[in-house]
Amino acid sequence: MRNSGFIWIVVVVLALLDFYVFQAVKTVSSNASPKWKMFINNGFWTISILVLIVLIIIPFINFDTWPKSFRNYLFATLLGIFFAEVLISLFLLIDDIRRLIQWASGKLFFKNTEGENLSGEGISRSAFLSWLGIGIGGGLFSTLIYGFSNKYSYDVKRIQLSFDNLPPAFKGMKIVQISDVHSGSFTDKHAVNKGIDKILNENADLILFTGDLVNDRAIEMNEYINVFNRLKAPMGVYSTLGNHDYGDYVHWSSEEEKRNNLESVKKVHAQLGWRLLMNEHVVLEKGGQQIALLGIENWSAKARFPKHGKMKEAYAGTEKYPFKILMSHDPSHWDAQVRPQYPDIDLALAGHTHGMQFGIELPWFKWSPVQYVYKQWAGLYEEGKQKLYVNRGYGFIGYPGRVGIMPEITVIEFV
Image (cartoon, one colour):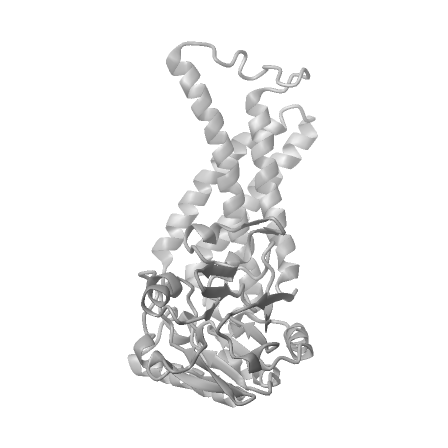
């Protein structure tokens, strides 16, 4: 019954939200016929009680043994309901605060609270805010459900980068970057294979993977070895570790078991034919000219993520090369250590954020809640002569979908 205390807190909070949101439901259905009122009210409480029952029984069953896809969708649906009710409650709170101020001041700032005409048709401010809250909350829930269909909708993003110090032999070189596979979340091998086909169709000179091959355990890759070992490139396939690869988010019977899992994850990279860079560098040669490719273990400026990476070890010996590429899973590493201490790292490649798998991306506008945690969270960033590209992730974790931020295959061409 691990985490039962937390579950009970969630149950209590959700029950309180249910009662609060029900006030909006009553408001918007006030003009409905008695039959429809009964249908709406009973439907609301049937769904609410079923959700609470599911949450209550989770600590008493071996939920981890249930089918993975069912667990993922159930978790996402419950999360969607929770956030929808939070949004609706915010609009109700605005209305309650408005009425409280009116009552406390003793002045009629808003005449006829329940019947004031906002549009000439008799709708009150309370009804308007209730409708607005339900509309936005319901819209969010519907969007999250729709997002289930996007989790394998791989988006090939192409960028051209120019560097003054890039050796001429590397002009025109094509690199494919992928990140955050999270194989433990996959449920459709055929769809994943179609993404690999897209990568192979690019005929890249070099393929780079920037961490989080699994969610927790090396065995998650068993079914996908013969998928990802298809990745080949003339200059090789190189990889690094991400925070999930260390197995920090699962209960192990012993530290030895956890260490063995990490060693197994490293062996998977070798089975795939990928060269895992563990705080080290390799030299890439083309046309008699050379550049350095560095790869470090996970290093994060955020306190809750590990700092296993050792830049000094990876960087040592690269001073003589005119151009350097760094693979580092967490983009917070760039501002915290790379830029201030290693100004000759020309291009850094990261992942980790997934763009939160939720946001808005338009040609002229980009937003995701993750930007309030990570300054660099998706796409290209430049400071002086240094560049960072943050991949939005090939896989998914937690929420089995994508809304606005699609799974990404990055194609970088040096021009």
